[in-house]
Length: 77
Image (cartoon, rainbow, N blue to C red; front, side, top):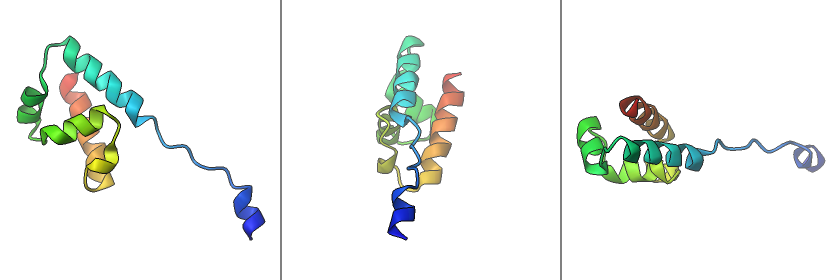
């Protein structure tokens, strides 16, 4: 059994840090501040910072983190 697990490929996590960097760069390029985005989206500023840094584990509940990321991306355009 251990041999079978040893040969099992490890699923790679998506590059949330890279996505977060793109979101931050785009937010800054259109002149939106973090407090403004947090206010408009009704998402805590600390969660937006976590999204931009790719630290989704900071946000309680994995589904919330992915939902926040989608909402944030849609907000930025």
